[in-house]
Image 1 (tube, one colour):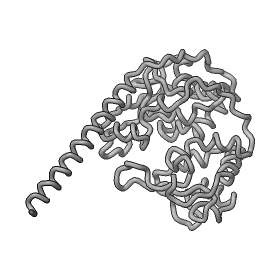
Image 2 (cartoon, rainbow, N blue to C red; image 1 turned 135 degrees about the horizontal axis):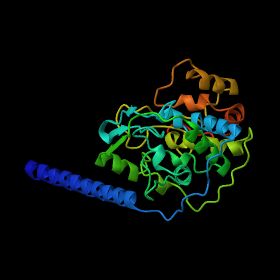
Image 3 (tube, rainbow, N blue to C red; image 1 turned 180 degrees about the vertical axis):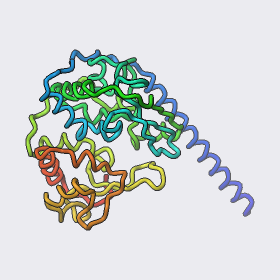
Image 4 (cartoon, rainbow, N blue to C red; image 1 turned 45 degrees about the vertical axis):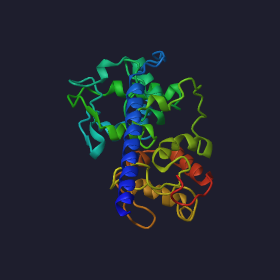
Length: 301
């Protein structure tokens, strides 16, 4: 009898493994097909400006909401190796016009389309670049950003590498990690964001990137399918397990120091630098938005 039971359990286990493998293979095929898709989105007509005020605005955006400096470095030369573990190997590329830089390969319009739509020169989706977080920007801010990038001196750097494992492709298709960027953007959307103001309406846009890790409800919890050891995003809602006891001053101090209200240093997985670089309007708008969302217990994502 026990032999029959063990054989039955082994058969169930085998079927489960085969079923999981089939699902994984389907996800990988879907990822590869999506990354090969050429989007029918025309190259933007936006062009750079030489106005110092516009360029200065672009520098602010690159260091804060755009997170360009965070990823590509102060000189935009790239070269940083991202610790991806079982997901593959990522080396951040040089985006200046220097040797091995990608800046000289893109026209202004192609660069604007990349920022707004996550679409590369050949019409396919960019990988990992968080264009889904900048797709809401006004044309004026997109022009400011590309104007600042164009104003940077050429630097010789790393051409960049993106090598993805099948596991990474599966995680993308189950919406755990946004690798395939263009499919997550509504390309036909009309972009008319409200003017910057210290209110929840504008703050919801400023907080677009927060929802990527902390979840649609901002209540945090483990990221589904994340590799072991990856930091668990915290609860940003006004719940007792989140920011209920925080004041704006606590939030402001966190942005400056990277320390939570209880004094603990936040995990490096949390990009504090862009938060620290928000201006006063953006910071107050984000705080107003975080206070306006419904309180939810930690882990609800």
